[in-house]
Image (cartoon, rainbow, N blue to C red; front, side):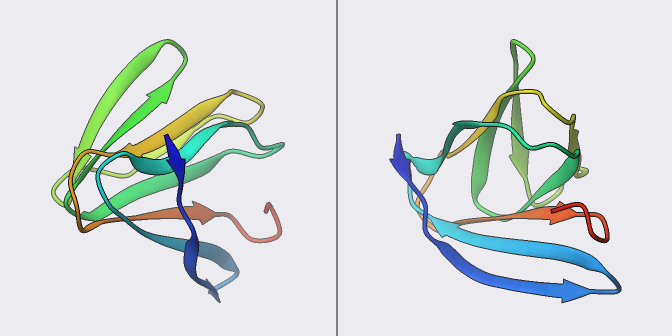
Length: 92
């Protein structure tokens, strides 16, 4: 997988939002965080792998909670995919 570049990062109401614009095969290779966070897909589609399961997400999918200290990865399934990682206040 080709690592995505962070396009935009902003805080709203204390929550950190990290926005990624990706093409097919790009994403975030396996990693983990000390705190849980949510991932949402806003355009295109992406595959999220966590705890031995795979979840395909699109703009109509509910955000997915990724547990603390659990390796996970996010991969774009098509060009023009946009996904956002959302961290609770002070938990990024």
